[in-house]
Length: 169
Image (cartoon, one colour):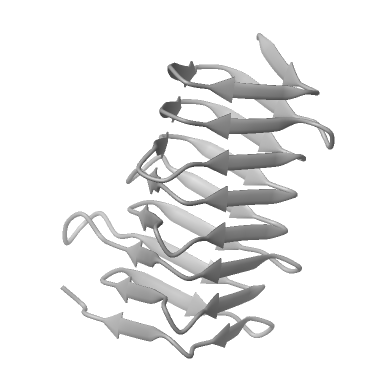
C-alpha cells in the first residue's frame, strides 16, 4: 500500500487522482484550483480549501478531522462515497455539496451551509444517507434539499434560518 503524506502546502492547479491513501497532517494544507478525484482514502487533519467553480469528487472515503472550506463543488458519489465530518466543514455561499452516498456528521462535528447542500438519492434502490449526530447550521442564505434519508440523531442539532426542502422525489 502506498501513502502520500502532506505536511506542507500543496497547491493544485491541475488534476489530482488518489487511488491509494492520502494523509494531510495538522500543518498540511491542500488548496484546490481545479480537479481532485478521490478513489480511495483521504484523511484530513489539516485544511482543505476548494475554490469557487472547482471540483472535488469523492468516490470512496474522506474523513475530515479538522477544516474543509468549500467555495466550489464537492460531490459524494452513490454506493461507495462516504464523507465523515468530525470537526469543521464550511459550505460557502458560492458552494454546492451534493451527497449521493453517505455523510456522517459526527459528534463534535459542524457543517455550516451558506450555499447549497443536496442529499439526493440516485434511484428508488440507491438512496443518499445523511446522519446528523453533530451540528448542522443552515444559514439564512443556505439551501438544504433532501430527496434521500436524513436522520437527526438524539444528540444532533439542526439550526435553520435558511431553507430546507424535503422533496421525497
